[in-house]
Image (cartoon, rainbow, N blue to C red; front, side, top):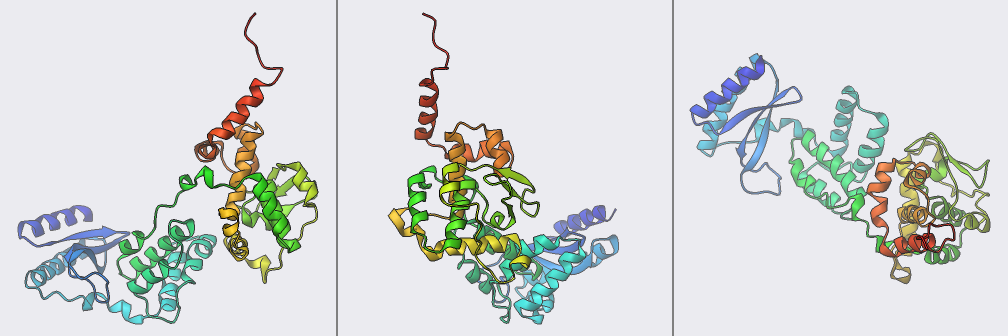
Length: 367
């Protein structure tokens, strides 16, 4: 087996004091060791890196890699190592050309069209396509995305993959991901229902009032607004083109559904709306929230998902079981219990407790 040959080659390199090892990943061979910083890198000191050899992972190529490792080891010892022979493919240059080649490799390996468009292409569109691809450009663009957000995580994932493909240092991008997680939401930061109703009343545009009302009353994900069936109103049915497929949702509060006339859909008109992926639809809704600058009202921030989170809180306040709430929200009971339950503060639990204690039907102690 070629893996045995590689292990034997690395053992010989170690015995001869060579400072690099042969490494394999996804059927390709690399040299791994402490190398000088690459040209145009923001790092200046030697650090752990890989050198792509453009060799397949097989026994014959392992022998070639061992010879290359010995040569590179001598260069490192004499401080004469030069990255130039290993970076020729970078001369092709622009962001657009690198993205195009990554796309070709991605689909050749059987990648999903939807994943490419939603998770990668949208991130790459943030880059100046005509500029030369560099680690400096990737880092600078990453920092334009708000820190500790899901969007920052997605951008870092895409940029790190592009950096690795272009033989840049992906770890410099990964380090910028931040601390976002579903657990980072503070239940005390969620708006009250009174504040939600106040914000609704302050929205002047009928289309966006309907959007706001639907998100608040039905706990929808932003893109699901564009896949709703209101035939059985006040039951809302979400179509199969969404994240979790077909499901039904009942309003909480039903009074909002009637009062805000949510039976009369008035979606904003976006260009090419039928061809937009769900992530872009959701982004357009999120941008409108920023335009409103709702986060400046009453010192309370507000994002589209805050309305979904308050719907989850309301389900608990109404006494619905986690299974029931999870079904309407389109996720698993495990997710609901693990994430949404932790956003429920002591005051909400107290309301449920008082409602049960004050009920005439609850059990009473024996006389």
